[in-house]
Structures are given as C-alpha cells and as structure tokens.
Amino acid sequence: MHSEIGIRAQVAALLFTTANIGVFTVAVYVVMLLPALHADAGYWLVLSMVVSALLSAPLCWLIAPRVRGKWRKKLVAKPSPLTDSPSRSF
Image (cartoon, rainbow, N blue to C red; front, side, top):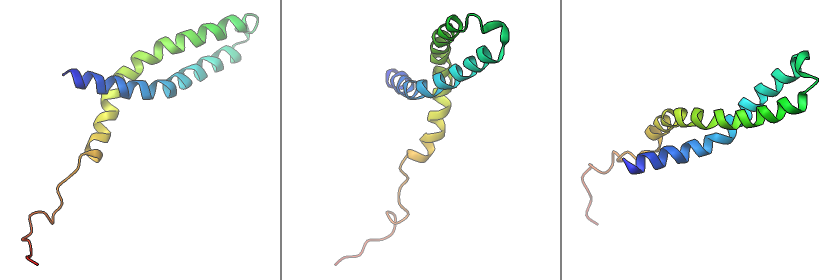
C-alpha cells in the first residue's frame, strides 16, 4: 500500500507542471478577455498563479491512477512465446 501511494505521488508530480500550465493559461485568458478585470490585471494574474498551483495539485492526484493504469499494461513484461518451446542441445 505504501509503494502505491509513492508511485501515485511520483506520477502526480510529473503531471503537476503540465496541469499547472493548462490551468494558468485558462486563468490568464479569462483575465485578459474580461474588460472589467483590466484595471487590476496585475492583481488578478498573481491570484491566478496561486489558484492554478492550488488547483493543479489535487487535479494531478486524481488523474495519476488513471495515467498509471494506461501505462502499466504497456510496461509489464510479457513472457516470450519462445520460452515454452523445447530447447535444443548443442
């Protein structure tokens, strides 16, 4: 159980930067597209940086098991069909 949480945390850490970029980009678009926020754009951009970092962490924690499940099937080594064939003596 402990290694499962460790692996999930590692996958979430790898995804964090990508998710943070996505959430922050959406927040910047919202700030720049709403004329009411232009007057205090500096404040809203700083706030969007903080909020995007806080939202990305739980988002990545929820996404990590699904990503790991996708890769697990590809990464697990399968036995070769030649291992069960009779061996030859040289």
